Image (tube, rainbow, N blue to C red; front, side, top):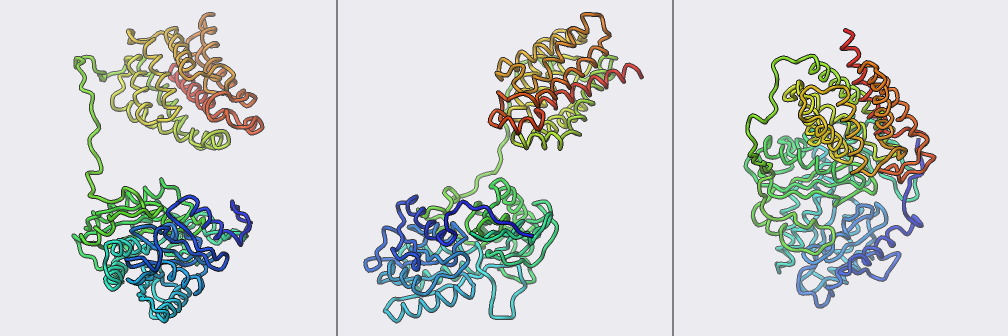
Length: 590
């Protein structure tokens, strides 16, 4: 089964030329040759072939891998990039045009990825340029480590490690080295880098249908950058496990693609394939650095994380490891104004973490919360209520997330569950449950530490206001609890701006507070009053389906969508309130 891919394009046949036009409009240091649609060449605006006094460095290939290669045109990197159609090698005439545009007396190095079409077209263009009197050298890049060493003529594919070779060759050329020396540096760099990729989806070519070749729950290991199948298909695994597998393959002592020994120095490139969020790429980088250091014994001198050589909209990543010495590092750290080379990636690596600053309190030590060895009756009730409320939130995580995905950012359940788990853990260790006020204060501290976002600060305000109301009395009466709830609601309304009917958690807590106070005033048992008020909280939360949001992210969502689900925050508040009320009733009746 397949379906038409979604693309923000015009005519699929014009995507490459329109990309080039947009690129040079965005970066004034770039130009293109006026030869569309046959000639698609991006070049430095400050380089004119006949007068250029340094070695020109040219690369290229099929488009669809942006920012490679055109995004790496700039002083200190590529002099020009030759762009083919999507996943199609550029023709000889286009390559020749690029050579003629930027090559001066010192000659030109062609950096070519190891694909048959690229080798043939760049090779023929090189021969033609030589016949015209140009000095040309060619370096073929094959850094793929996914497959066993080939016995045929195809060899290893050129992948994201090519970008590191671009940087080294460009820096060597900028330093004034001869063509032979620039080529030698590029050749040496190409022999020191290995790459392997993993995909979670296949890519969609402009104007074509999206394939579901992989299917749900699967990933492809060792694929190329043109959507071709990988070496293996496997179930999706946690990031750390995938990274471990990839690095062991790259650094395998059986294939010996890289000349590594423990204590060697290396740089690491984590490359997104087009649709992978930066957060996921950095999680991959985290594991990769640790494994290279701890398992393989390598000193990781530089880490480059981002999207450098993509495959259109493919979800996935590749890892490149390059063995380096001080000379290679100088080339990698040399300045460049190429638009997509990562700024700030050079330089030595300081410690990755430092201690959290600690506030030195002048409070007396006897003011700190003290855990009682034996809980009183009200302490046991408080413990039961807190535990029930927290466990209820944890159980509702997926439901709350599902609701929130329709009206918010989809993380309400995760956030509430994270806070609830912290409360359960901290309660075991240091909640002084015989002191109601201090326990509420500690709940606020737990929430503040782990929840974050709007929910975190709202519940922190909620707890602080309750603590202020309860403070001074270790054993709170039912009236004091009712007063504390009312004070908390007032504080949340004051600082958050929400009121009844705004479609927030207050639409659960305001009716609960009113019913609780009314029930207590007519002489109902506190546990009964608490239980009855929890019903009011539930009704209030469910009524948010019929409200137009006036606060939070839901305020930007249409009324039709809001009518399909209740407010997740209100439902969460009603849930923990109800769970606590039921737990107290059960505790008293047991």
